[in-house]
Image (cartoon, rainbow, N blue to C red; front, side):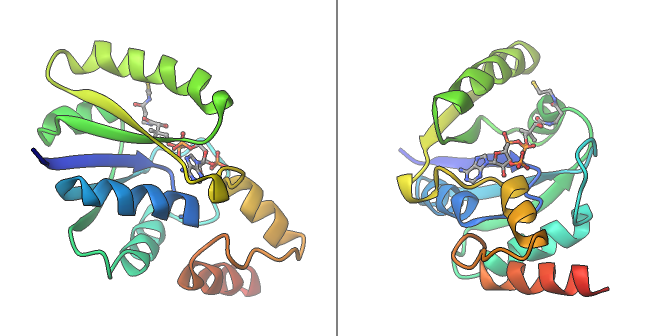
Length: 162
Ligand code: COA
């Protein structure tokens, strides 16, 4: 049976094809996939939360059952306030696993019962991609075509030309 509504949260600064792969596959196994953009900022962000939300909307507009939202504060509070039963995460390598298991266990403690973290294995074509590395290559004039959707590449070009 399909889950009614699932959450895929992240900073998405910016969204990459690795994230899009997880979004597509997540959307396939639920009625509505909410992509939740975290807006707490500790990393050096290239885009503000509104820009990231807009880029994700544009990049996912063909998929159909996607809602893009942003939140501040604890993921667990957002999950509980919106009655999610499932939060999905993408796993790229065993390094992700070591980090993710601690986060999933901490979140499980915060959620209480009835909420599960479910992991989807990243498509191996995308397992080397991260948002930070993509930005670094781009800012040093490297080629990032094929790593981010065209609307994101255009937004990055606009951002640095300002
Ligand atoms: N494809 C491509 N890249 C991926 C990926 C995939 N499938 N999965 C992860 N990544 C990349 C991301 O782009 C990100 O790259 P970056 O560090 O270069 O920006 C990196 O891997 C880490 O991604 P992720 O683990 O999703 O971290 P995040 O910062 O994007 O978001 C939250 C993590 C939002 C789930 C977490 O920070 C959170 O819950 N924050 C709210 C505060 C909170 O509740 N804290 C307590 C948590 S226990």
